[in-house]
Image 1 (tube, one colour):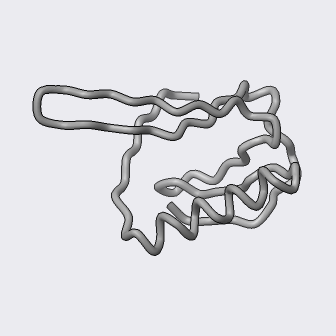
Image 2 (cartoon, one colour; image 1 turned 135 degrees about the horizontal axis):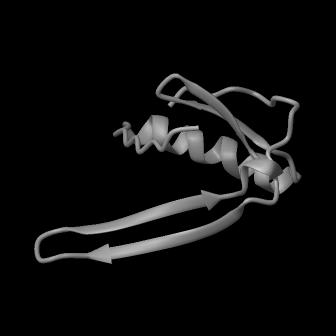
Length: 83
């Protein structure tokens, strides 16, 4: 599988809806199925979650990250969400 780095900007309404769906899946102990720029994948329920903060001279960034090994990805799809 080739490397990939995709970033997309959302309205507040769309972003919060995606966060709510993710939070609901995490609270329920379920995997989270999502589609990002045409690629559909599943975030496993035990993905590593972290928050990253970066500050430069004229910009501040915060990233909410979920990481997992491809071998940990479940086969059964959950609800899809287009990103």
